[in-house]
Length: 562
Image (cartoon, rainbow, N blue to C red; front, side, top):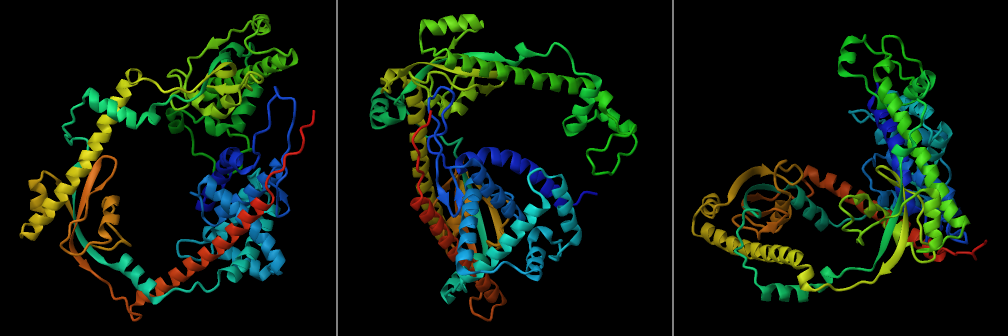
């Protein structure tokens, strides 16, 4: 049986490192002005020192992010975004440097064991250290290509040292009694509320569109319709279908490929029912037994996948050879040499209608992903590197640069009319919300129930009784949370509009909690606020160190070398 920690770490390690390292590292490596492609004469290498690392070096940057990512996962940050992981990784390196400067010692074996035992990922449902989970974690490292046991031990030691540093930097995290009382009120007040909802989609704003209104709206918002500068492009396509291998893979090759990628080829449902119970072995490299050998049933899928991969590799090589040929022959944009080269290569350049990245060609939406590559194209560098496409690879060719311009209303009338209609509807929806709120409040003051008053206005109403913001009803609209904060019993909040709804919160009842020190929750909230304040202090200090180091060692680009 594969435990939770085995599932979590093996799944997160492989997907996390394969995807996040490929995506986020792009923003993490501070290479201002990415390295040029084959069409450029120079090669630039950036140098940016950062506490003993060079952020301009991909290997150093990858190591920083890899270690930080691993550390964050150990602390349970599986949902952290790329920018958050980047900031954490940088702060971690700054903290290690500061710990060294302050003489914070490396942890003893006893301290290291205590630190590991306190990590949430190694605790069971009762909050105790689970040796089995830790053992499964160790086993997962044996199959990980990203980390070894030695890497994990090093990061455990570093994080334990950072934990000791945290106690020095964070301080006691002082909080005032008033802060504790406010937090108790915010979290533990008992509410009973009714929420009335106005539907935006069915709201009839009664908008009449006139030429004068459209012209006025267009003039006031002309910046929204300005067409930016953009290139006119063509492309040369290298379809995978044109590079299918003529000879199918051998039986041994197909089986080896299947065993290395078995998860991609699940057995047919009927085969699962007929086969004997599967092996419980976690060793993916072990050969399949006769009872679990599904390869014959998926042989055709395996062969198709192998041929597709081979075809894409061949298309990639052909596209690369094409760009190398352009470079070596010193072909120039829009020239007879280009026409001759295309003819010799038996390739055709297909013209693309000019487009902006928020409105790529309908039949090629993936072009919007290549804004950076397209923006580099010009008269001198007129062809791109091979770019993956759904059908294979393409090489983009620059033809000319079109200037930005402001279109006439007649050119964009349909879009302007739609924007005007939406703008007016939103405005009138907000006005209707103000009027409705006033009528609802007046009806309640006159002795009418909020529910009856809301139904008279044809609003949907739902009541939520006796809850706190610590444990709110699951279906309570999020918009009601902010609206409730300043309400007293008997008050109707201003309408809070979301994308398709407008919500009116009415406080039926509001019971404040005991905010004195005799309340058992007082000490709990005080501890939480102190920990939060301490963590914020530490984070602010490390963030300032990161900012100062980055500013002090801004990238220095050496002279281009041939």
